[in-house]
Image (cartoon, rainbow, N blue to C red):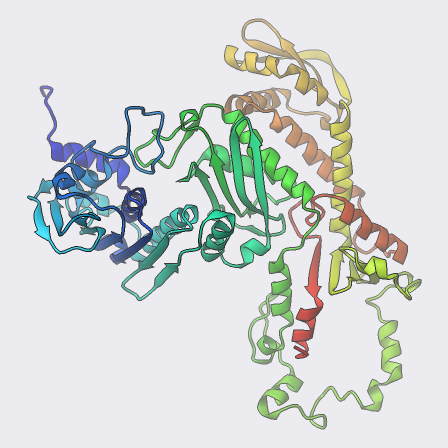
Length: 614
């Protein structure tokens, strides 16, 4: 077949295969165009998960009638200067509208601020109609119908209507976080409606918008970040370790205001939380990177969701360092979600009416509560008559000597100094089931898992010892020779001094090999070849040696687990209070080495609500 020019329609359809993957991609491109036009209010309407209808209306600057035909032409844009390295808008490629028009029925109606009337243009399966006058408000309305009707094979890859609608909602939320001063409305055919009113400018406005999108619970469990390194600034909010999710869908990242899904940023977040989250849990984050546009390439993919940094090591180091420092300086904080779950477990209404409990799902029945619900509380009918002789001083004595509270724990309580009640974790009041410490502060009740808490304390002490000095190394009887590509050998040798601090002695052995003469004593017998290859891969990707450090920390975590206070051990009051004071002084002690919470706080006000006192 001879070489020939493809038709303009086919060129646009090929481009659409990259730019327009699903209805959410259309919404993303149209919303970004509206924001680039200076819109302060956007209204998005969808039907059929976006496959039947997508309409995006804005109050932006509008498009002059003379430019409408250019707007639907390939590689025509008003957003790009002559410097491809100086991109300061969300869109710049000039591909979105012609790509959409090549696979759908597209109509654009617009009126500029100074225009007396509006105009519209239509594109159907790549065929462009003439521009004609139309009634229109200030701004632009873009309507997309029958998406992929011109490429029906693509329809086979679409998910259900609900899944596509969810993807659209996620795109709108992701963009809206970066533009808190803009009002967003998203509505669908099932009368579902997402409304994000204007939240205002500045950090306060941004935090209000984050709360609108992610819920009021996130700001209560988040820490603010503001760090700068070599003219790269990182701001935003990250969750405390005890507030996490099962997936990474609530990790939002922005580069110069552009929403991105970048592997480097995601890996940096995982690395920053590696010591405080379980492997199957994910932090909740909203991070904004501000960087010179010349130092980041956003023209990696037509969808513009991927970026490439000129200095990825700098960006990764900034994210990891800033998050770790913020977590270390935050002290210990319990997640409010844990207290909420505890409140729900104790809430009498759920048990009285047979709702499944959170622990095992079994129904429970409280006859006293049922009687109260039926006709008010009556002492005579209550199964818990507190004035009965059987519930007298003898009952109280039985409670005081019950099996749940150890004899050692009961000894030595009495008046607690007021200053101790004003500490973060308060004063120990009891030990129950030989595992849980019950403490009291000035305004709350604290329940501490003694094993999990002590495990974290021991682990942090071991890590400090590892970082404070070079680790002991064990000399290999015969050096182990590892064959590697020359580039990997160079990278490993460049980090030889750092590796030696961790007890790994390496040196170049010819043009394509590494000689390993010492390994960290903590590792014992290990697969040296696999360790070196993993290090080479990580240095190539991130220019770090975190793999070896992570292995050593994992061993330290195992040692901490076996060397900490065991469940079932009875503690004296002084021992319990000493543990509480150590927790207050140790960063990250709000979670154990496996990411589980070490304590739960229940405010006195919440307890009073449980008993109907508020």
